[in-house]
Image (cartoon, rainbow, N blue to C red; front, side):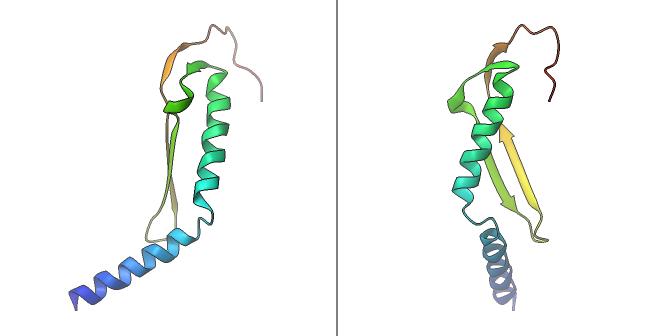
Length: 81
């Protein structure tokens, strides 16, 4: 019974992850866009930008983004959107 329940949960997880579609393409675009935004404020190492998308059991997306920067750029005001 326990193995069957675990199997069902595993299948649900796989199906929910399929909802992200072409996840690799989404992550590549996300990383590029995040780099462009952060680069306006920091001297960012482009290879350090990382993004991960996970789908929980309720079908909600959990997005984690990280980056490393060398220093803050010398701006006196925040750029407008």
